[in-house]
Amino acid sequence: MEDVNRRLVLAERPIGMVDGSTVRMENVPIPGPGQNEALVRVQYLSIDPTIRTWMDDAPGYLPPIGIGDVVRGAGIGEVVATNSDRYAVGDLVFGLLGWQDYAVAGEGDAALQTLPAGVAPTLALNLFGVNGMTAYFGLLDVGRMAEGDVVVVSGAAGATGSAVGQIAKLKGAAKVVGLAGTDEKCRWIVDQLGFDEAINYRTDNVGRRLREACPNGIDLYFDNVGGMILDTCLGQLALRGRVVLCGAISTYNDKRRPAGPGNYRNLIGLRGRMEGFIILDYVDRFPEAQAAMFGWLTEGRIHHAEHVVKGLESAPDALNLLFTGGNMGKVIVEI
Ligand SMILES: NC(=O)c1ccc[n+]([C@@H]2O[C@H](COP(=O)([O-])OP(=O)(O)OC[C@H]3O[C@@H](n4cnc5c(N)ncnc54)[C@H](OP(=O)(O)O)[C@@H]3O)[C@@H](O)[C@H]2O)c1
Picture (cartoon, protein in one colour):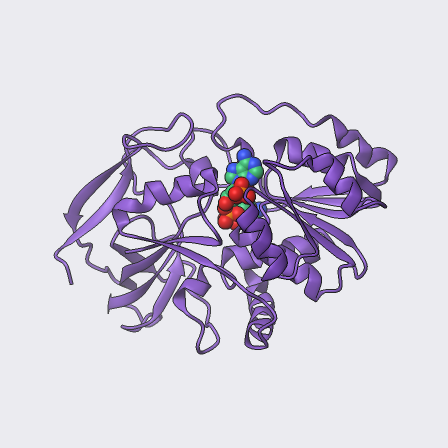
């Protein structure tokens, strides 16, 4: 065991992308676990776009990260000391462990749910973690995907979007179209993941390609990006089309309020529905989705990719990968 806890704290609020002055590395003593607590050595960090939103001093579904506080983020680690009946040494614990080497787990904290044997810890941060759960419940519960739907998903080569498109196929979508930012990503989602079509939103004419791919309109649009892509998809909804508002990554580094999509009004005439959601509301039902994931995984019917970056000090650069599109699959920091 190293004798210090290295931790990354928020030094100042970023304007735009995070940079060298956003976080500061501190060396502090390793915290001792108190009564009913366990000490966890963090192994992997889940790098999520929402971390960028927590760095702003703005209201949200969780409070902003305080200046001087450890950057909040999910991770997985191993219990190395315990004063709790709930945690044994060697247990893997998943939760908001933060950007640091060691974290203290209390008995009330969310701990890793039992994973099927043979599932790697990095998968607990991907298909079996927030991204897989978001894809599953966002598509099936919030989006009420039905067999025969024409489904479009943005951020399609990302951790969440890549699972959305595959689950849509597994659940009988008539067609699944993905939007991604490079030709390599477009090839991956079609050739390896089984999407029917891919559109490179940086080089293709998105409106025209969507009209060709979905001549009768989009039954379900799963939105990970917001902005112009959301607006274009709203303009091509089918009768009783649905829009799942999962995220708006195209706006997270913006200082200005994004311009409102004019095509929202299509929801009225087409009796469409769009609904935002936060995956934390589904925690009690994670085992249901994890059982489905495990079945698909062992049958070789669902695929995943991890983009692993080494070293705690690389966490800010890893966060920026989400915004430059430098990642293929789930971004994870290995400590
Ligand atoms: N509602 C919830 O509870 C919940 C839970 C988890 C995640 N989310 C949301 O889901 C979305 C995806 O998150 P993730 O963790 O799975 O990340 P991810 O998709 O693995 O990575 C982010 C991807 O977004 C794309 N992107 C970045 N800037 C963009 C822009 N301006 N326009 C279009 N695409 C852009 C990039 O791919 P390209 O190369 O294709 O541009 C990048 O690889 C985020 O909006 C996140 O906030 C919501």
